[in-house]
Amino acid sequence: MNGQENKQKTQRIDKWLWHARFFKTRSLAQKQVATGKIRVDKEKISSPSRKILPGNILTITRQRDIKIIEIVEIADKRGPYKEAQLLYNDLSLPKPEIEKQEATKESMFRIQSEGRPTKHQRKQIMAMKRNSSE
Image 1 (tube, rainbow, N blue to C red):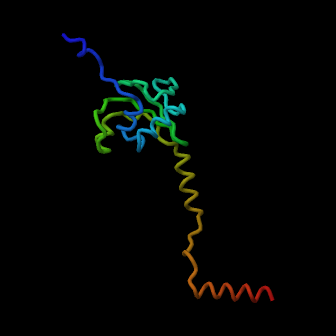
Image 2 (image 1 turned 180 degrees about the horizontal axis):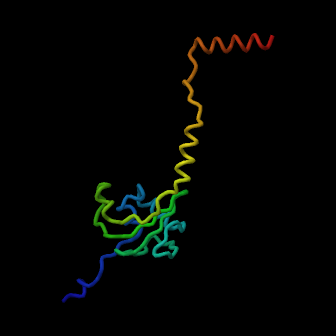
Image 3 (image 1 turned 45 degrees about the vertical axis):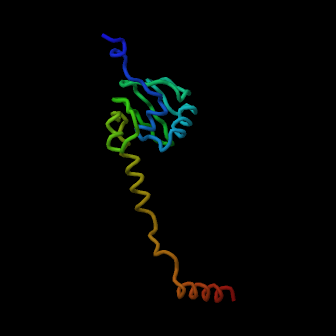
């Protein structure tokens, strides 16, 4: 048996994040890793060249969203979104119902406007303003 057969396939974390379509560009992935927004198996990392392999758990922090990902496969190239989804299992918790309810409450209380006033309506507004100032 060859020693190569027992070795698991590894890949740089920035490259994998780009292949898995978590970031639009590889340089964006590198920046996120360098700023400490990515953890591998609960360990904060800062090197985009850090090697990962299947079975690693990634914690990705983006604005107010936290994703917990288990790496299933290493990709050779960046493919379509459907293929990228096969590279990982999403272990993230679903968003709490409270956040969903607050979002619907906000949309309920928004005032529905009819858009910008027409020329006729603007003339009426200007006339009312002139009459009120006299």
